[in-house]
Each structure stands twice: as structure tokens, then as C-alpha cells.
Length: 90
Image (tube, rainbow, N blue to C red; front, side, top):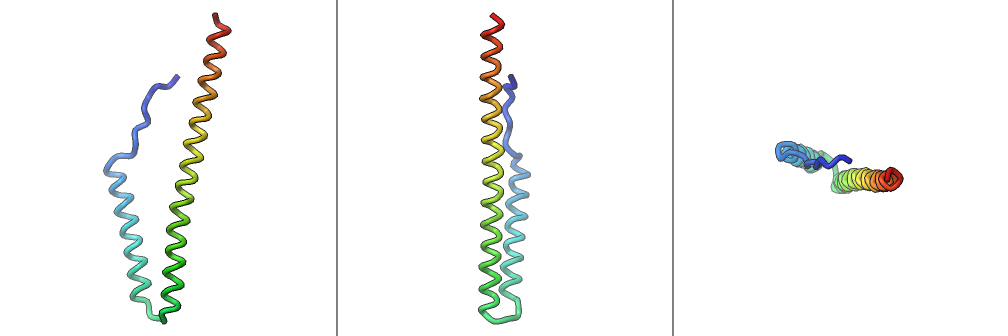
């Protein structure tokens, strides 16, 4: 059985991800703010941008949770198989 520990992302990668997210969010807000148009158009774009960001976060979390659940199920099945093999080997 694999007893290695899966380490989280490095601090550099985490910083990079947060930085790029912040830059993209700032650029989007600045674009909407400086866009020529009425308040209704800017509000519509701002709400759609907010919805896009929140749905992206929910999608990534859901996919990660599904992946982690599948890994856990696989480890449980592997442990059950090893237990059965050990019992029959005796």
C-alpha cells in the first residue's frame, strides 16, 4: 500500500494563483468602471462577471471534491482487497 503523503501546492504556486486571480478581477472591475455606457449596462456586466467568478469557484470546488471522494473510495476498496487477500493467504 502506498504510504506516501501527498503534499499540498507550494507556497509559490499558491501565491501565483492568488495574484493572477486578483489581477484578473481588478482588470475586469476596471474595465466595467471605465466602460462608456449607462449604469444599467455596467450593472449588467458587473452581475454577469460576479456570476462567472462564483460559478467558476463552485465548479472547481465540486470537481476537486469529486476527485478526492473517488480517491478515498479507491483507497477503501484497495484496503478491503488487501484484507481479503491477507485472510486467504493464511
